[in-house]
Length: 235
Image 1 (cartoon, rainbow, N blue to C red):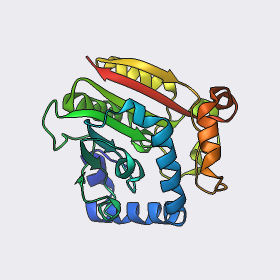
Image 2: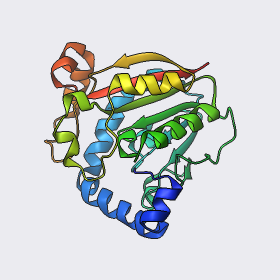
Image 3: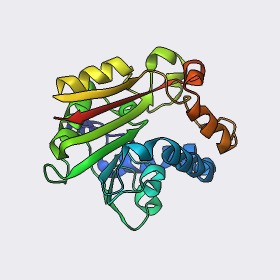
Image 4: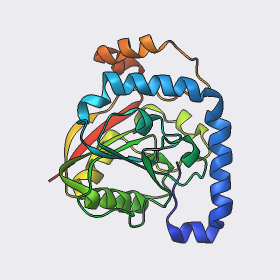
């Protein structure tokens, strides 16, 4: 998902034009690998992320894309947020879809979420102001003790390849994101600079058994990991 602050969106193009652009970009990028990506995400959830998310949790998938995370995670109630109009067609019926700009007020009450999960999304924000506003909304909607779990490309390990995607704008490291969470009044509990490899786009479709093995050997992360994983809690 990409999101724009409303003023930026209005200045550049209308909402309909922008949403059509999103549908084209992500359709071209992900449609061919959708089945494989679902297999990978089921593996990641089963062998890593599910242990961070109690089954009774209320979860929002922020910048949910085609819903590979939120469709497969086990939790009590599911929300997903994105601006791509194609997203709704990809989500399971039990997922409540919020099609909105994440840097504006979320259509959710305060203290209504237990987990905000986001993967490969913050880099699509246009500015640090958008990021600050998005984190503020996540904090507002999280219950006390609720978590924001954020994964994304670490610019320290992707100085060139990071810019191969036309819709990448905001470059972050694990430490800059930690500082953003800390500044927002959240308590950062996990900071991993190298977690998963960079991308499944234009990459070989390895057997998912290799992903299970990779997750079980953190030493391998230091050689192949190019995405950070940062987790913070609401105090």
